[in-house]
Length: 398
Image (cartoon, rainbow, N blue to C red; front, side, top):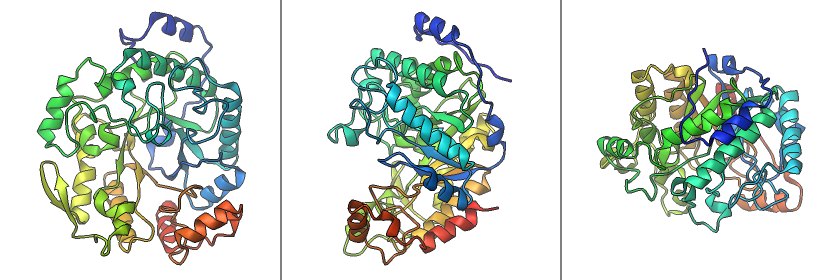
């Protein structure tokens, strides 16, 4: 049964305007009742029909899609200007609809995942500077609510949309006085201390969901945990959200020192299993059990909150494709998520600006070749028979 609460922080005029709109939305919560496996689509150019046909051929059923990298009519695609939101940009919305239509034609469901919101411009489009305004100025949270009212109102009846991921990798903690690697008790104490404030991420989500529900009572909403979707930060929340159509998401790149691009620049890259990193105020030696324990923090929290595993999503995970241990790592992550009954989406499928986690590319395709062919408009000549993608295909297909 659908329930939601209107928080006192949501402007009354916004609620009234939203409630005045007719509501007719596709109910896709049932899509998530059984395990769904897919990919992330974080491309700089809007995906075409061939992209979605190729994704569907892998066995994927869904894609977590961002539009924030696309070139729009204003500085920030669809938002117009993250410094001051005045309404959806109609030309950008039309472009997004075309992409959703292509996904629907291929049978791929879409979770929309903006990288930016008003007052929180994605750092890679903000001169590399983290934008904290959303977590320090209430006016931007009001603008974010208006953005989601507008977007949900525009897309609620689109058959491809299986979720609204309110914001990719929020981090109100970043300048809020608590370290990502803090002990669990410290993370929980910090979260409790934020109750009712602008850095209270669950309260922020309650506000955004209330705005969405005023125009769209049924489309699932996906929420990332704090500290860039760290499962330990999600586990620090004192309670689940009030809305019953929420998917709780986390991202998995730990041990980041080994899975990420900087590791490939070492004379001797760190190896998995066996790499040791700082973790939770101590140290972690990463192996299959450690991966399962880190991921398990989110699932253990969900179990304690009576949130079923079908509402838990490993919404991003990955490793550098040229890392010798990437296959073993991907296997251990997928095994850990599936053992707990969650959904997953690997990062990433055919990203057009970066080859680092394009698992279709075989190991003999070096980054230089990828970038040269891409710049020459010949990306379709890249071989796509990589062993890592075969590993993923085997897990994607029933």
